Length: 611
Image (cartoon, rainbow, N blue to C red):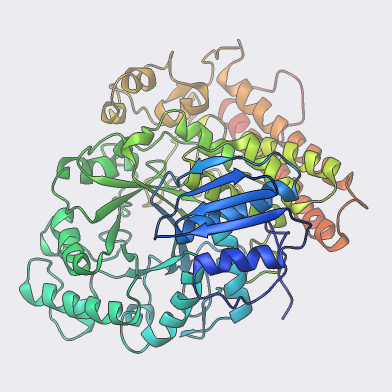
């Protein structure tokens, strides 16, 4: 088997530790680190995740909880490796739960996976490589992720048997390894499981159903006593849930939460619930309103070990969309922010898209103090570089940093990640700049002004201007000869009323709405004059041309690094940029032609637009 790259832990060789817990592992890491180190003393005690780094006369002391000292040692070694000042003092993870959701199926495929096959499953069995599992655990611990859900939220057979003795003995082995790295398992369950195991219903208020879940959950914890909990996708995209039985989502979630509570487990309930079979001719239904409408009224009705998992935007991980209004609501309910590392709508880990700047835009308006946990759809698989694209691995690094600090820190994370991945400091500086530019470049050619969903149906890579326009998924832009977009202000669907002030008024008024979100919140005429004096149509043209040129500039900057980066890495990324530039041109030519054909208005600069 080809050995995977070290990624953002270059200071450690591949090894299977002798350590049995996180505190012991911290010491073993220091022993095996491949660089000259000062004297480092580790003082561990307790179960906490916080740590302290203090300088001493001969070196440093790292102290804290058993998992905390592991995080502290990694933080110290990162600073020493990139030759930057060590951050002394205390550090405590911002989010207590910092989770990755793998969308892995037991046949080995990964839904929305762009990095090879599953790390955990093959041929409907739990199948994994011990060395890779240790290395993956080390990567997770190095960036502070403390929980992993191995299986897809869309639970397909036989994953509905993971909580039975058919698979629990093997699942326990993975849990035992990841525990060393401070990582707990979560299992995705299907709400209808009781109906596949002898019951005629999964009604959450049926006592037989509750007893079945209590018995099955006790069995799970007999194998994995520190399981973090269950993850559930219910009443969503044809999956059964409480609505199937005339119950609300608090009633459904609380039944499962009660089964978990004796063991300290959490019930993580996804709020991705909407009408996925709507009529495009019905203008009364507006998909981005769905999460708020389904959940906001239930505030205070969920048990205290229920966490509502809310996507960062009310649509579905688009390049640019408004922050989910549900994140502002429900002050008496625990909430988790869900982001996507897997680049489903942001280039499939082919096109470069560094996500920290996108998160920064979210955090600039999101009520951070009202969110108690964070999770991300994982972007890794069995590819040699873990993420399919070597640089996409740095999104995982950036997510861990966000989860630990509660701040995106885009520039800092890009700089640190590039230095960890590339020893040549000038090359690292170039890569840092490329990372920070990449998301805006992609947005320019794929989705300016919040105009989403012009993607190839099903695949979601590449342009298709009306691929979803007359479909059932509720993802419309309704472009015609004079305007584009859906009006979501008071004169339209009134989605903006779901936001608190001052965002409600800001978004509702076309003159104050941030231009990067203009076509998400409003239907806009092509001759609408933007803040810089250009019309909306001209800006659409200009942004797409600029995005294509930006993709070519990213490619040129990468090619300039030839000979300064390991050849295999250079060639892999070179090939990705060839695909990205071709994709950017398709976007540019297709979208500009689409709007030119609708309007008959040419580009003011006379650039080539196909007719």
